[in-house]
Image (cartoon, rainbow over all chains, first blue to last red; front, side):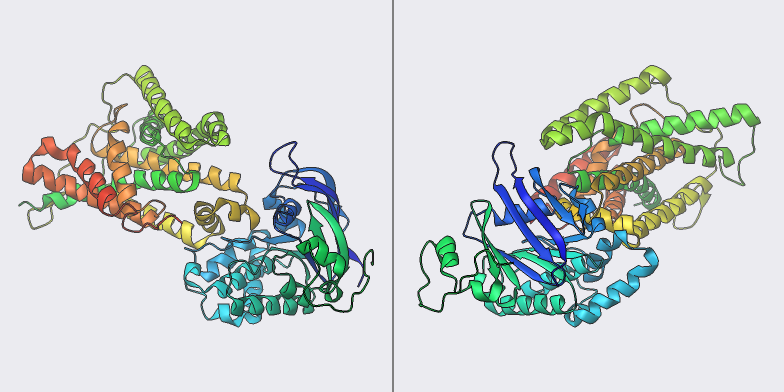
Length: 253
Length: 302
C-alpha cells in the first residue's frame, strides 16, 4: 500500500521566469490511494497540479512516476508516460460525440485494443453509454465531468490527476463526482487531486496535503485533517467553528 | 433561363469548394486566414504542368483516355503536384508561419500570409511568365444531356472526382484517429495536448491536406479554363466566402458553400451579366457576416 507511484520533490514552477507560483512543493502518492491537495485561494494549487502535468513551466525540482523522471515532459507526452490529467474547466470536446471524445484520447493504444477499452469505460459509466452518439456539449455538468474522467481513464494510466473536479458543479453533482472518484480508487486506480471543496475531498481521500504560498505546509491522514487545528489555521487563518477532538497528525507518513 | 448555369455553377463550385476545404482547415486548426492559399493552387497547377511536360519528354506523346482531353500522365502528374504543394505549404509554415505563430499575434501571421501570397505569385510570373498555359489544346465537344444542358466528358469526370475526394476527406475527418485529432485541436488545442495529441503533427497534416486539395482545385481550373499565375489569387475571395458561408472548420460546409457560390455566380452571369460575376462572392460574404456570422454548419465560439 505504501509503494510510491508519484513522487514530487521540491517543485518550483510558474508561468514567467523569476516569478514562481509553486515554491518548492513536495508530495508523495502511493499506489492505490487518493491524495488530496488542499489550500486557500491563491495557494498555487492549480499551478502545482498543472506543473506536475507538464502544463506550467518547471524551474527546478522533480516529478517521478514509477521511478521514471517525467519532470517538465511536454503535456502531450504525459499520457504515454502514464499520467492522465483532467483539467478543471473545458475538459471535454463539446462538438464531438461522447464516443469520439473517448476515441480521440486512445492515440497511444494499439488500434485493436481501442474498442475493448471504450466498452470498459461504458461498463464503468453506464450513464455515458446511453449518450454515446450525443455531442458532449449537450451533457449535464455531472455527465461532462464523468466523460472527462472516463477519457482520462480509457488509456489505463498509472495515476489519474484532477484539477478541482467539483468546480462549477451543483451540490448534487459534487457528491456524485466524489462518489465516482472513490469507486475508481476502489477499482485500483491511483488518484491525485487538488480541491477547493475540502470537506467533500477529505471524505473520500486517503491522505492530504495543505499547500500554502506554493509550498506543502502540512500533511496527514485525510479523515483526520478536517479536525486538525493546524489545517484550520493554515487553510482558513482561524480555528474551526466547532471545537472537536484535535489529532496531531503533523509529520505523519 | 437556361439551365446550363447548373453545370457551370457546379464546376466552379467544385473548384471553390476544394480550395475552401484548405482555407477552413487552416483557419480552424491554426487560427488564421491564410491568404496564400490561392497561390498554393497556382503553384500546384504549375508543378503539375511541369510534371506533365517531364513525363511527355520521357515517354513521348501519349494518347488521352477515351473521350477525355488528358491521359495517364496528367493523373500521375497531379499526384506529384499534390505532394509538391503539400510539402511547399509545410515548408512555408516551417520557415515563416510557425515562427510568427510562436510570437502569438494572429494578425502578424495573417499579414505574413499576404506577403507570402504576393511573393509566391510574383515568383510564378518570373519563372513561367504571365502568358496563359494549357494542359491540352484539344477542343472537347460538349454533349447535350437534355433540358438544354451540355457537358463535356472532362467536366463529368472532374465533378465525379471532386465528389469522391470530398467524401474521402470527410471520412478522414470523422472516422480516423488523425481526423478526430484535427477536430480536437480545432475545438480546444490545450485540451488536445492533455489527451495526448501531438499538435505539431496535426498542424503538419493540415498543411499537407490543404496544399494537396489546393493543387487539385488548381488543376481543375487548368483543365477547364487555363493556367495563369493569377489563377489562385482570383479564387481567394470565393474560397473565403465559401469557407465562411459553410461555417469555419466544417469540411462539408466548405464544399456546400463552394457549390452555393458557384451556382450563384453562374446564375448571376445569366441574369444580370458577366461583369457582376466577381461581385457575387463579395455580396454573399457580406450577407453571411451580417446575418449569420457562424455560417451554415458553424459553431458559436465559446
